[in-house]
Amino acid sequence: MQFEPTEDQRAFQQVARDFAGAELAPYAADWDREAFFPVETLRKAAALGFAGIYVREDVGGSALTRLDAALIFEALSYGCTSTAAYLSIHNMASWMIDRTGSDEQRQKWLPRLTSMDLIASYCLTEPSSGSDAASLRTKAVRDGDHYVLDGSKAFISGGGVSDIYVVMVRTGGEGAKGVSCLVVEKGTPGLSFGKREKKLGWNSQPTAQVIFENCRVPVANRLGEEGEGFKLAMMGLDGGRLNIAACALGTAQAAFDAAKNYMEERRQFGRALKEFQALQFRLADMATELQAARLLLYYAASRVDAKASDATMQAAMAKRFVTDASFKVVNDALQLHGGYGYLNDFPLERHLRDVRVHQILEGTNEIMRVIIARELFR
Image 1 (cartoon, rainbow, N blue to C red):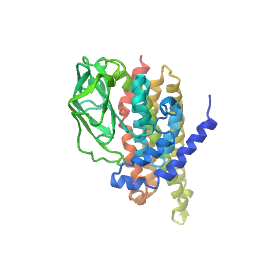
Image 2 (cartoon, rainbow, N blue to C red):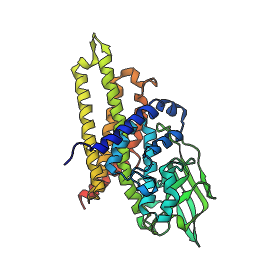
Image 3 (tube, rainbow, N blue to C red):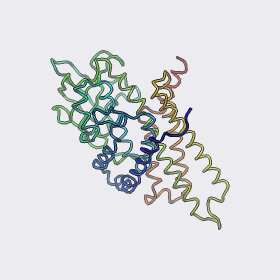
Image 4 (cartoon, rainbow, N blue to C red):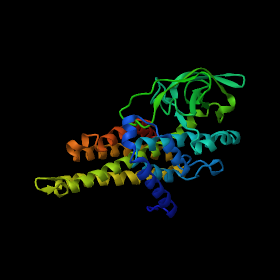
């Protein structure tokens, strides 16, 4: 049982913190306000090894662990939740290619993905299949050495901007066993995109529908065998849920630190806010929630790294608890700021808007409870 990070983990965690402080935090408010996607900043993160965190080294990856990734995303999101979360999605898509792709596929795409010369999106959710992901309807019909795709994907981060789309499609019958995974490249005839969605938060990354109309994709772009796509998608989500939880946690820590500083500076009734016991107790509860969330996240990451039998359940537990706790901490931090917390001049309202979606994506927290209960009664 190890509760302290290794020397290497401390080193890349500090690199991530420094990057967040210098390259993310100073610009996060502007990116949010202008809905600007900071591609060049993402490429700077890639130069530090953060675009292929658990991709193998022969294609430019860092070959780190899920626990390492949690430490990195927690640190990055302290600077900008939305941008760090997009980097998480890019990492998930790249890992799926590294995990299941042939040597030729890996060499074709991953060197440019780990440098972020190419940007990747993960495409599972559809307009009519959200939590019931295995009911997806996007069809891929075999026609010689191509598949012909028809259908659409919804809420896709990077939609219309990304170069690579890792897409779950139906090549067989109903249910999970009929799902396969294809890599679709931008510019493929028949691939188009919906309008950029207007969102509550996560405004530094574009979100749009991805649409397939008689879209011909080479069979050579399939990852793994037919029928293996849903299993691969779920494996990707185990890690994705950890990363999304880590991003929520880093945001909550930033909000907590802002609230603590505000309580030290703000005076009411002739005293600093930190001298009021009721507010001390609230801050104490927030600190406790953050620490409990952090320990659960790190434990779940270690179980995923170990390929333990309970890894999926632990990842679901961490995602559910950490994102719920983080949203509460951010909301409490805003409350401690009073009216100032509601203003754009302070980062609290942006933190609140950004972190809210973490309770929804990568599987809603209600679905996390379904997964946990299913594993408990297995």
